[in-house]
Length: 158
Image (cartoon, rainbow, N blue to C red; front, side, top):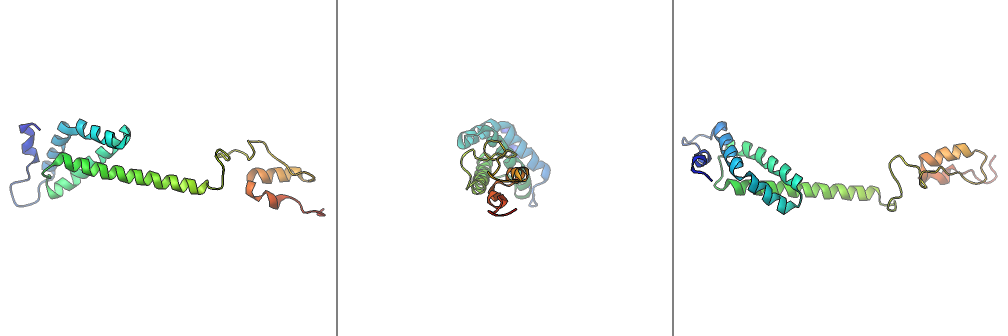
């Protein structure tokens, strides 16, 4: 880190909380010097460059809030990396939870069995044999494939 930028990282000299402008200068100084290293380390750690950029920006926004309240940490780059990694772990957990919810919803379906807006059976409408109301049955089966047993007429029904 350049010597000119180190003064921006020092907390305010008075005993009060550091001012917001000092925190903003500190965050800007760290980001200007270490942004490539931070994003590169996060990209290696996550394996996803877009996610690395996103969590680095989230950590930067968090630094603006925290550092104006608590002052700049002793190791600002380490603080940014730790915060960004925690955000990445949260993103991985959210993605995993979403995938498990999708798997629960699609549990009874086989791979590629149903598509949004597609008719069952590869898009062809199907009818029941021996029905006089074929159009009604076709419409019912098109809209509600699990209820097809209910849509079939009972024997002896007229």
